[in-house]
Length: 190
Figure 1 (cartoon, helix red, strand yellow):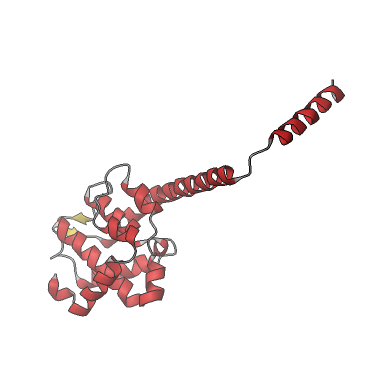
Figure 2: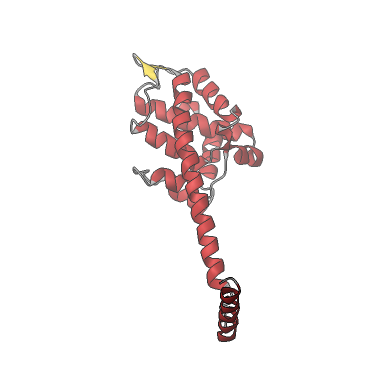
């Protein structure tokens, strides 16, 4: 695997892997059931498109190739996978209208869950099938969208709660005035 990645590419990996405190934490964190996808969805990490815009497509593709190859190595199918299969899989992920919106931490979460066996196998008789790898992203994307929605709702609730605590409290005079108006309306509509 080392021959596949040059020293300059490894330097790019280190730069990407140190992007932001939330992302640094998530890179080395185990994605346990019930918490990993939630943490990945709410982390402030760059998307694939963000990294491509900052460092160029080649850097993002390298990062993807590295992690895809590492996953194939884990599955014991690295030797059967061609460089072309790894490269093309990375390119298809980048070019996909949805998956390009994944953050680095979300993709790492997907790989962790994939290695845990939560999605289908991507090989038959030790021959990798990149199409199956790409298909496994869809159920993850569905779970991720649900968690992103929950994370946005939590943030909205926290903002509202903070705004309520910061709002001026009614004075005794305000409360008396409100009570007076309430009583008048009650008599009027009896």
